[in-house]
Length: 133
View 1 (cartoon, rainbow, N blue to C red):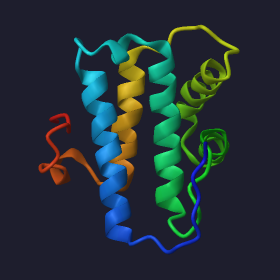
View 2: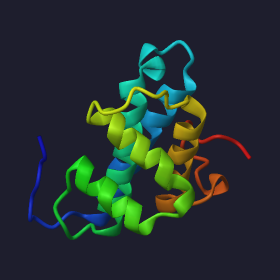
View 3: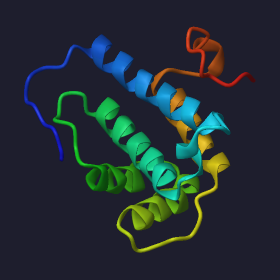
């Protein structure tokens, strides 16, 4: 289900919500005891959610888009290094691929998303999920 609204979004609240979701994804991927981390579908979900977060951040005035639309957006605007990961995540999400998405590149993509909307790690000291260095 895609939720959409044309109501203006308070930018600070939006940024906080996007950052919290990135934090949740990071915590899940960092927790080796969390069963979600080991699920291929969850890692695909995480990649597509980061695409949606980045698209929402870039277009705060628009409604939140679907994950497939966010993946399309990401493939036209994000660095090429992320394209294979996004394409694999989309294929897994659509049931077209069962190749494994390793947790490390997915976690790196979450960091890329955090850096894109929050800033480098030194600016994320309030976020307990931010990796050091």
